[in-house]
Length: 104
Ligand code: SF4
Image (spheres, rainbow, N blue to C red):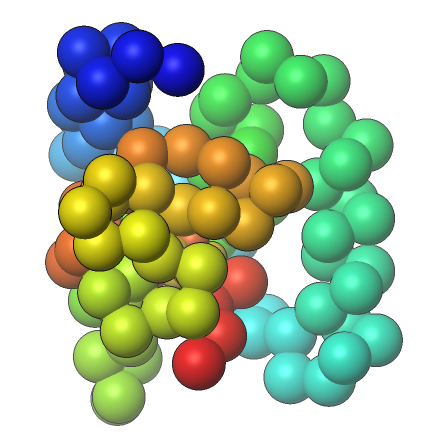
């Protein structure tokens, strides 16, 4: 994806979240099995259904939980591209956003 497109999509996702899209923030997939199941569910979604992806992965446009988890500290976050490199997500993100696929 071209940088401009990524930037536009990041802004769009930010607007969708700011407009109050209710996402599944809980439960956090604590075990490897739960994490794998959530990834499998994400793979089942229609490829172009962005909102469904945001809902199922529990996106938030701010840090989440007592530990204030956020993309910036997540192992899937690519700092220079501001990108989530988890193949099941593969979306542009802001460092202060969060989703429940968060891993360190
Ligand atoms: S997996 Fe979630 S928390 Fe981690 S970078 Fe991607 S969107 Fe952010």
